[in-house]
Image (cartoon, rainbow, N blue to C red):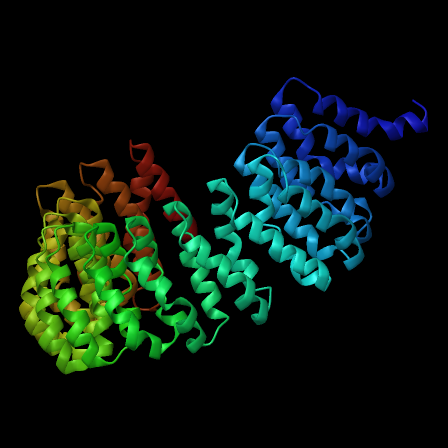
Length: 584
């Protein structure tokens, strides 16, 4: 093969694979474009490879999607930014295809290439491309065009910028709803680039037009535009330009628009004065909406909105709505509220929380839907910081104890996770009296995840209350389960021993734990025996910490592991041999 044909060989393979009937081969070839480009060098990539790719746009969507992504990273392979405009032609064609994912990827790649262009390249190549897409016969190209204005605008000349604003206006008034929808999606990003003068003169009229569009799918997208534009304006300007639009959105006949406004409630974007005067009524309307989805979204915004208004307004306007939502017919609304309601405690302070919120927490803790109970438990820490553990435990402890035996195991699990925190704040006496028996009862739960969490819980409690407490209160009860006729209880003993080992002293292991472990070496159930091997592996490092207990490793644990390593069960042998490795 002569040198010239050797040079052509990579492109020949690529062309063969790109024309192959098998899609996977074509896809592979596209993924290897950078390798081929390196082999060809920048000049031949520009003159041969890019034109070839441009001709092969008629392919499977999967291939085109990969190609659109690859071209966005291709500038270095064609000789750098001064040639970046060469990539625009194939991407322009990809931006006009029927498949949405391909178009979106092509727009993403064009947005990567655009900042690399010089102003001359932008005026000569990018802006004409934008015009062609904007005036395209098919809605697909016009839809793609909407996503390309924001990136090119800051680099364009003033005259081109004016044309771009006019062209974007045409897209906002397009006959096809899909194009108007795309324009609404990208209006916020474009608004941030045009400068305040043109924002007020050109962009806000476009926004108002889209916000009153006959299609609710267009109107709902303008909610995020409103947030983006409001961030560029002062509160007074926001109020002047958007108050009426906002009121219309809150009362929109489509629940999807009301949902979007509830989900993105704009108080932070439009300033506190605006919030106090005008948005409270609008927000209350959303909290009382007749669609559950809107109430759910609005419930999630309650603490964030309440931060921006005074306490009296919360008590007079927001809290009555919250009380109604606690008994809402939709479980999803109650669950969303349960997740957020504790956020009101720091805003209202101790007195108002005790008076107004605690009864609502209690009601939510007794809700029939497990997610509601779960959400309120997971956020109790916020309330605790405000009112203190004493008040919290007096009011809510009976409900927490009740939930500890909840029929939904995830609720029981959430309570277990909360116990160490409660223990820290309640103190040892109160804990032993109210919750000690409960912690032990979880060790015999029918769900493995609860038993496992209960053993970890015991270790955390040992860390909180100290080894002496564990020695007197929990270790004897745990070890007593080691002789239970049901193997699951014996297994839990092993898990508890393993979990607690790092938190107790070598002496406790020697005096209390080792006799039980050595007894269980001969257990008839293989699952118990291999867990004994795993437990011994955890005990060895603790015993080695103290010179007095180190000999026990050779005297008791090593012989036990040797016995288990000759067991008839494969798993028992495997875990005992693994445990033997560090002590051999």
